[in-house]
Image 1 (cartoon, rainbow, N blue to C red):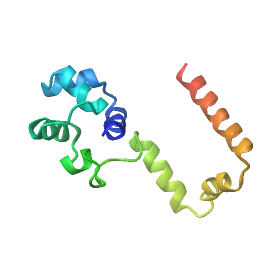
Image 2: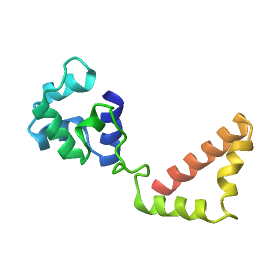
Image 3: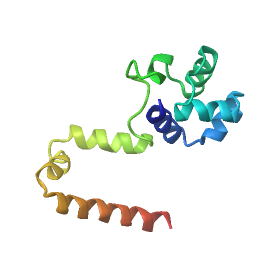
Length: 120
């Protein structure tokens, strides 16, 4: 469940503390659930599922929730979809498949530096 909660925290840009505060679940209880030290009770699962907009089964890892977005940003999702649908642009995805690991890592590092410079 830790990986699922990590993903949902990131997707919703919240901390475990904020989730505890917003849901009324004691932070220590939520932390124990997160760490796997205790099994969540049904009422806590329902609160978490409602808070994140997913099903209880998704939280438990029993199903993939189609409502959970892969992209954190809607504009990024739209751009990626446009690249996917445009045959000429689709090669951007194919390039990484053909690169050596070192070359791909260099591209990733370049993109990270570019993003950092845009954020500062």
